[in-house]
Image 1 (cartoon, helix red, strand yellow):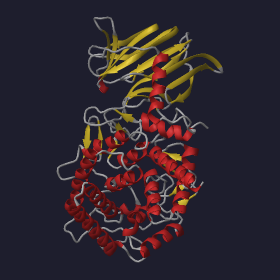
Image 2 (image 1 turned 90 degrees about the horizontal axis):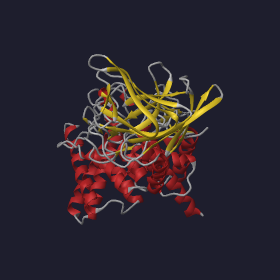
Image 3 (image 1 turned 135 degrees about the vertical axis):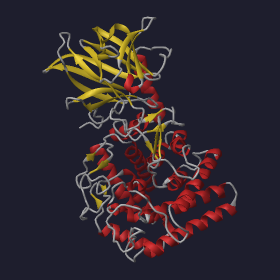
Image 4 (image 1 turned 120 degrees about the vertical axis):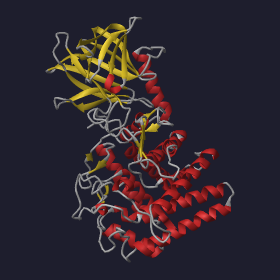
Length: 570
C-alpha cells in the first residue's frame, strides 16, 4: 500500500488554497473535486467547486486511476481494462491549476449554487462564476480547446461547466475572487518542475522514506497564505476537512516545522496570538474569513516554546521572543483571572473543547472541570515567561513568574493528588467522582524535577501498570475502561499531540528508554497507516481525516530525536 494515496491525501501546494481531493458526491460515490479551501470547515461545501469528469472522445465516462506525488497528480483513464488516455495536473504560481491531457476530454462540472453563471469577457476570455463560493474560474489553453457552458435560467445558469478537449490539450484554470490576475503562464512542464524544486528547496533532503516524505509534504501542502483574517501563513490541520488553524494544533505544527522553516514555525504562533483578546483569551480557531471564540484551547504554548528552544536554541530572534513572551503573559492572566473565583482555586475548563480533549471521559458530566493538565500547562507557561525574562536580563520579572509556577504546582498537588493519581473534579459538585481513566492524568510528568519524585514515580508506575501504552502508542482512554471506544475520538484512539506530551513527560522524568519505545511505536503506526487524525489504539488503523498536519509534525519530531539518539549511542 502506498502512503501517497489520493483517496486519502489531497493534492495541493505550499501557501495555496487550490486543492484537488477525493470527496463523496451527491450520488454518494467518490469523485475527484477541485476545491478552494478558504472560509473554514463549518461550510457544508468545504470549498468544493467542480467535479472532475473524464470522458472518452465518444462521451462515455472513463474510470480514473490516480498517482499522487508532492508536485503533480497524474491520472490514467480506462474504459473497462482498456487505457484511453491520461491527464496530469499541477499547481503553479498563485492559485493557478495547470493541466494537460491526451486522448480524453476533461470536464470541470460546477457543483451549483443559486447564482452561478458563465460568460465571455470583452477581451475574449471565458469565465465561470461559482457565486456561492465567491470565486471565478478563468481558463486558458496553449494546445487544444477550453469551452465554458451553462443553461441560462432568467438570473443564473444550470449545469455550468468548463471543458478541455482536443487530441491533446494543455492549459490551466486561474482561480480568483476579483479581476483575473495578469502573470506569466508557463508550460505544464515548467510549472511542475518549479513545484518539485520548491518542495525540495523547502525541506532540503536528498533522500526521504515514504513516510518522512508524506509527513513533510503534508506540512508543506497544508499551509495556506496570509490572507484576510490570517495575518501569517498558516498550516491548516488538513485540506480534507479540517481547514482551520486551531489554537493548540498550531503549537504542534510549529514543533514539526521549526527544523525546516523557523519563520513559518513562528507564524503558527503569531497567526493565533495576533487574534488574542484584550483579556488574554485565545480564539478556538482562525481561518481566512475570521476567528471563533465560542471555545478556546489549552495553553500548551509555553510548553511548546520551551520544547522548541531546548532543541533549536537560536531559531527565533529577539523581537519574536519578546512578542511570544508578552502574548503568553496575557494568556496566563486570562486563565488565572477569568477561569477561577480566587487564588486559592485552580483554573477551570468550561467545556471539553477548551481542554482540547473534546469528549474525554472526564467531561462525561459536562463542565466546568478542574484537572491536572491545565495547571501543568500554566506552570510551564510561567516557566517559559521566566526563562525569556532571564534571557532579557530581567531577573526580578523572572522570579515573579517562577513564584506563579510554584504556587500553581503546590495548589494542584494539594487539591488533585489523592496519593495514587491526579484526579479530575467538578467544583460545582465536589462529591461527584469523575473517571480517572484518561491519559490526561499523566500531564504533570511534564514538570520534570518540579514534580516531587515520589509522585513522579507513582505516575510512571501507574502508566505502565494500567496498560495505556499499546503496540501502536498511548491510548487516550485506558483500553480496559468502560468509557473506551475504538473510534471514540478522545475516548481511546491514539493522537499525535498527546503522544508527544507523554513522550516529553517521560523524558523530563528520566524515563528515556520508555519514551523512545513509545516514539518508535507511534512512528511504526504512521508508517503503516499514514498521517491520520488519530489511530485505533488496538489495531493501529488510521481514523477520521487521513492527512493531518500535527501527526506529520510529531512523526518528524520523533524521527529527529531518535536519529540523534542513534548517533549519540554509535
